[in-house]
Amino acid sequence: MADINEFAKLLEEFGKLEIKERTSTLLEIAQCPHFENVWSNILAFYLNPQKEHGLGDFLLKSLFQAIGKEVDLGDLEKIKVGREYSTGTEKRIDIVITGSNFVAGIENKVNAPLYNDLKDYADTLDNLAKQSGSRAYKIVLSKYGGNNPSDGFEDLSYVKLVKTLKQNIGNYMTFSDTKYFIFFKDFLTTVENNLNNNIMEDNPKLRHLIANNFGAINTLAQYRGQLWGACYNKFRSLEGPVKEKMKEQFAAGLIRCGYWDEPDDNGDLLLEFSFKKAPSLRFYIQLKNTEYLSIEAEEEGANNEVIKKIIEENDYRLLDRTTEEIADDIVFRLNQILKLLG
Image (cartoon, rainbow, N blue to C red; front, side, top):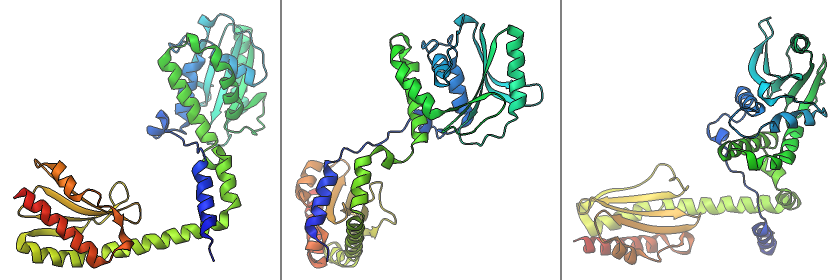
């Protein structure tokens, strides 16, 4: 037999948790949080020290730091960042960065596997470096790494890159453009959400509470379903008695008495009424918070404060009253409102 005290203790522990909820980032709102081209475009913008973000060499230095390389960036004004750099063989490298002392190529992999011709990419980058008498750095950037790339490419994960960026970003915040700084922080959050998209990983205490009380939670969920079923059936049974009592009271004045086919935006069920005598009156009963019944009314142009007073403190538990009692209460309150409206 279920122990009510066990459920109460479980709910008390749950109520004490500070659960970390995720808020939507701009890319998530735009429904492109995992598009490889979008990520590459953003990276290319912030990798360029000359762009208006004001973060200078922040991302570029952090990138080299993340692969364990100390690189003299040289004159920042001579650094160029290109997207979809052609190798001359109908293949393209996602991001290529050229400076006075280095050449760097990034093959960005967000969700796609690594299938690219890395030898072709490596040859292209080496040739660019040879022309300028500098060194080529080749990077495969993916969510979690583990690609074991060939041809001299470094295997870098977004996990490590984001960690490095978060360690360094404070040193550049003062000099950055506020707008672009916020954009970049939002991008980092998008990346982190993609790397760790499970709320349970964000909330270990919640995870442990559920794991340690799995049986009790399942039982409680079953009882919740039974409660909802009982309330739903009771609520659906109101239409007939209420309609009959209204016809007795208001004769042909009743235009509509029926349920909305679907729950409203809050998940509540509605039983709505309309009348010839007061066509602008909206009168309905509502099943909300699973078992509470609420009577609501509003009339355009009327003194709604008076209407609210008639129906104030009307919420009550649906299962605590009989269908007949509820129907009588609904009709009584509606009759008062219609009298008020003349």
